[in-house]
Length: 118
Image (cartoon, rainbow, N blue to C red):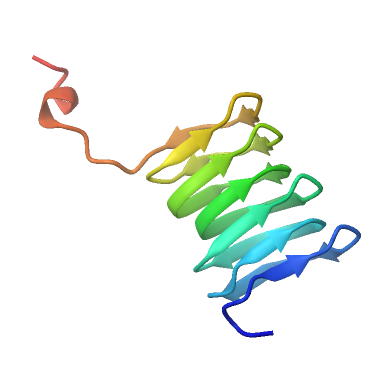
């Protein structure tokens, strides 16, 4: 498999951790521990991740538990079940997604909002 092709954790598979560098990761099974990627993490509906995640982008359709730091974006689809804090410049939560935690968006607010809007 070429290094730029995503790695697949299949439905009946368990994986203790993932530090895959530039390769993407598609989870249909279960991953535990820590995930560090310079690419995309996709958790399919059948997928379950219990890990702190440091990724470029994350798409959640299944279950995720842990701290999520995404350099570009985090998308929680309607079927997502997420428990943990999310930090990303762009966060999309579709109607129907289940989420428990905090959200921090790394964006620069206008001075008028920062100062309380005089």
